[in-house]
Length: 135
Image 1 (spheres, rainbow, N blue to C red):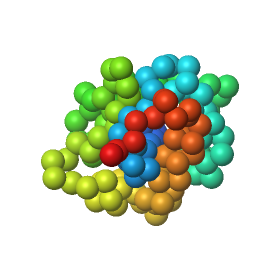
Image 2: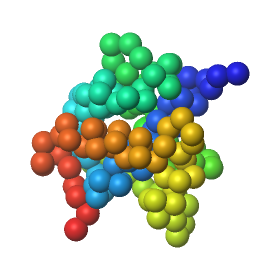
Image 3: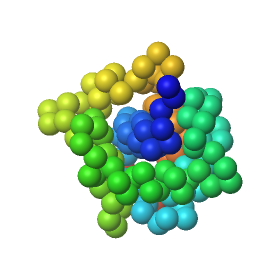
Image 4: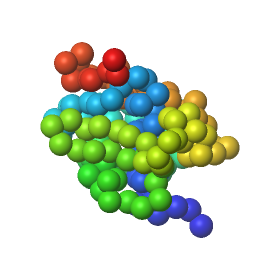
């Protein structure tokens, strides 16, 4: 049985959070249009997008935006997003590194390197003032 649309979005929201953190980024703009366009930019270029067939259409970024909004309330996820003035990804498991969480989230079809690539494609879309990098 294939994963539900909600489960596919959840997996991508977690993977993107980890991929962004792996770029040395602590937050990206919470401007809805820029955030969704950044996702759409990354999604169109990412070679593993076909593993998530429910995330499609003219604006997959809106599904991602909704999923990010739900991520803080999800239980058992190894990463989530805090949404406010900025959208801030974080590892939810106390004491875990981004690499450890990536290893947990990755599988044979979408590796840790694939999630890092998605995060890179996402971050590269934004203007410098729309990204907060770790110091």
